[in-house]
Image 1 (cartoon, rainbow, N blue to C red):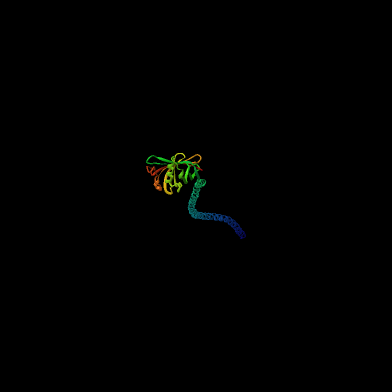
Image 2: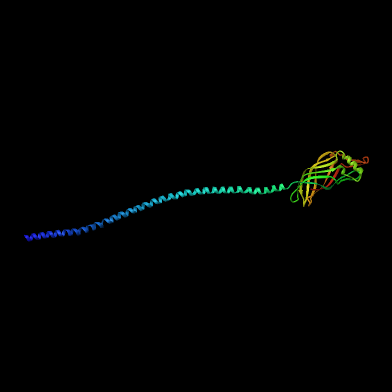
Amino acid sequence: MKPLLALFLFALLFSACAEPESSTTSTPEQPKEEMITPPPVEEVTTAEQPTEQATETPIDKPAIKPEKATKPADKTPDKPKTDPVKEEVKKEEAPKTAPPVVVKEPEVVKEKVEVKISAESFKFSSGEMKIDGTSTLHAWEMVASSFSAEAMVLLNASNELSSIESLTLTLPVKNLKHKDNKLNENAWETLKADQHKNIVFKLSKATITPQQGNAYQVKATGSLTISGVTREISLDAACRVGDNKSLTFTGIKVIKMTDHGVKPPSFMLGAMKTGDNVTLNFKVVMSR
C-alpha cells in the first residue's frame, strides 16, 4: 500500500507541477491571439474618423472663399465711379483758366497803342485860295494867298492819317484880290467885308479813305459862313502826308452865292453881270 500511495502522491505532485507549466504556456498564447484581433478593429475605426473630418473641412472652406471674393467685387465698381468724376472736374477746370490768359494779351496791347497815339495840332504853313466866277462879258478870278488854318489830326506810329478831329479855315475877305482895283472894291462891298470880315469854314465830320501810298480821300462836312450867313456844306478833298508829317489838302467846291444872301454884283451900269455860282479852288499846307 505504501508504494501505491507513494506513486499516487508522486502523480499528484507531477500533475501539480505540470499544470503551472501548462498555464504559463497557455497564457502567453491567449494574449497573443487577443492582441492580434483588436488592433485591426481599432485601426479601422481611427482611419475612418480622420477621413470624415477631412471631408467635412474642405466643404466648409470653399463656402467661405466665395464670400471673400464677392466683397472685393462690390468695392471695385465703386472706384471707377469716382475716378471719371475727378477726371471731368480736372478737364473742366483746365479750359476755364486758359482762355482768359489768351483774351487778356491782345487787349493789353491795344490799350497801350491807344494811349501812346494822340491827336496833334497842325497850323497853316502855306497855300492858296482862288475864287473863279463868270459874267456876261468874261470870266474873272480873285486869289488869296494869306489866310489861317488850324486842325487837330491823328497820325499813327506808321505816319498814316487816322482821323481829323477838328479843322477851321479863316479867310479875310479883303485878302481876295483881283488885278483890277475897281473890281476888288465892288466884290468886297457885295460880300459886306466891313461888317463880316472873314469867310469861315468849320469841320464837323471827316471820313477818310486810304489811297495808294501816303494819299487819302477826305469827305468833309461842316459849316460855311459868308457875309454872316452860315450853311451846312459837304466837300471832297485829297490829302497827302509828307515825310516830315506835313499835311497838304487840295480840292474844289462850287458855291451858290444866293444861298448865303449875296446878290451877284453888276458892273458898268449893269452892262456886265456876274453869275450866281462861283468855284472855290483851294490848296492848304499844314505842319505841326
